[in-house]
Structures are given as structure tokens and as C-alpha cells.
Length: 79
Image 1 (cartoon, rainbow, N blue to C red):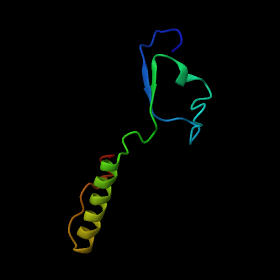
Image 2 (image 1 turned 90 degrees about the vertical axis):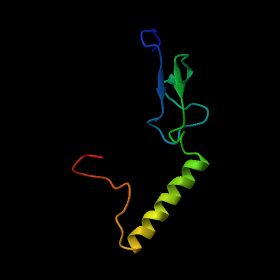
Image 3 (image 1 turned 180 degrees about the vertical axis):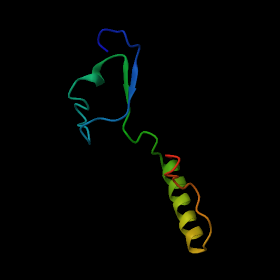
Image 4 (image 1 turned 90 degrees about the horizontal axis):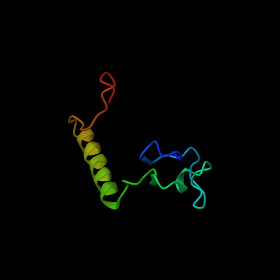
């Protein structure tokens, strides 16, 4: 990255969690101008939390009523 042959990178996960607010990377990657870093949970907004909670409650209610659950993981397909 320092040589400039990579235009840039966006990094989202650090090997040391939680990262220190003073040094999120022991390697200094966060100081490079062609690196953008975000917290691992950058998409975890209040709205996303509410939608996730609502979906979980809906599935719990569907389970209680004996209905098919939504958004199930298909282990045979791998997702």
C-alpha cells in the first residue's frame, strides 16, 4: 500500500478487537492516505437494529403459529 501500486482499500475488520481508539492497527494501515477504515459494525444503525429486531419477532410469532419461517439459512446451498 505504501508503494502506491494499489489505488486504495476499504478495511472493515481488525485482528485486534476491539481496536484501540488511538491505534486501530498495530501495522499503521489506518495512517495511509489510500486506506479507508470503518468500524466492523458500520452498517449497524438504529434503523438496521429495529428492522433486525422486527424480523426476529416476526419469525418468533410465525414459529408459534406453526408458519414457515422467513430468511432461513440453506446449508445445502451454502447461504
